[in-house]
Amino acid sequence: MNWIIRSSKRSDYLQLMAIENQIWHLGNTPHVTTYETVEDYEKQYTEGSQLVAVAEENQQIAGFLGFHTPSSLAPHQKTWSIDVGVHPDAEGKGVGSALLTAIKALAAEQGIHKLSLRVLSTNPAAIHLYQKNGFEVEGRLKDEFLIEGKFIDDLFMAYFLDYFF
Image (cartoon, rainbow, N blue to C red; front, side, top):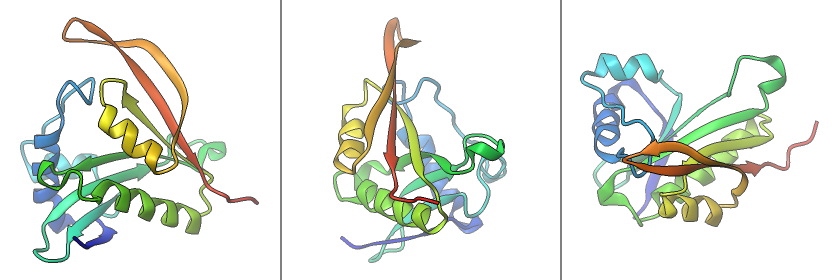
């Protein structure tokens, strides 16, 4: 399947909100957030703060990748923190890889040096996706979260772009 990768628009919010409300569970996030209204979603994500993967054949959104600087500190502006979500019907169809390829290109255009993310150790499919796309484990916070009576590690992963000043 072919994916069109583009910046998010307000008209995408209903589909994005539906994906977010469907994909998160305690196996892949320490805190499940759901959105009741598009207005709630809009408070969290501004237009253009995500890349979306749209199926060429039916124009349905299959996944998203959010990106932002980790802080407003001037020395922190060459890093983007990212988060990825894929609709369950689109898993295993290259959506995640397409989004990661697109964010690498956008980051290079913007002079970004590092893409970073956090992933629970209980999410092997996501870890595999990130490693397959060149991300490496930078660190592990052991027993960081107590979820459903079990301690879970939080992994820090990163991808470094070949951008030099």
